[in-house]
Length: 284
Image (cartoon, rainbow, N blue to C red; front, side):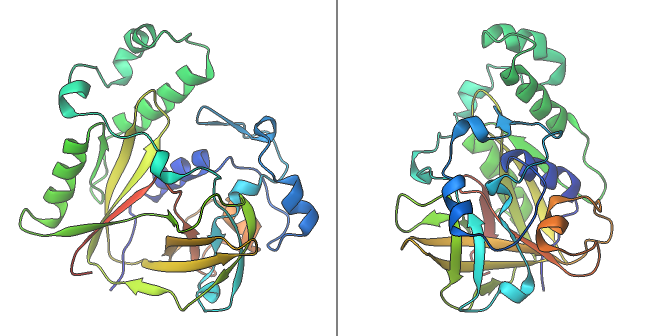
């Protein structure tokens, strides 16, 4: 029994925004590449949540993808984990606070004035991107919400699992800190598969305050928890999801270039950024 993301187009778009997408050249990384990826902000393709799709050099942060063959103790995977303590991440505002602020694309001019942003600024374009994604009506196969408060997120989780269902949170945890942003990690023990009929995935969106794009997922794909050890001694515990059907994905998707495969030939797996949240029933 696995899980499936019916809204994968939006989720992968969000993931790529968060991952500073560039094209790919190889799976394993050399010492010189590790040094070159030390984290100079001037080299990043993303500015306030927006991707420059015309850039074509490899960005180290696309190294979050792996395959089912990597789900074995002793396997080495090149992974990018941002050198930022997840515990320092900003928190959701209260429902009372966010209810006083419009959250709609039609209100963008007012919101730009409210946050003192120029309409041509990167921050304004990031806001527009988020509001457009959040205004998209869900398909028949998906259930989603843009959570602007902790209360709205919990309401969505309870509605998905049932009011009487207890649940837990999965996220990427840095067991040691700081971490080197990109290095080869070893899978320290056989990954633990989490069997759940339903999960809720919540992905951070670029916005002046914290907004999560949350969606229900069920059926199809597979969820794992992994313990990883870096070459520099770091230890990271991270959830990873394997999308089993990639036949409808864009042939130019960065994961295919990185993993050197074609759409539909093999599952594509990826880790979650540290600020993203997965909710699963406690029984999973």
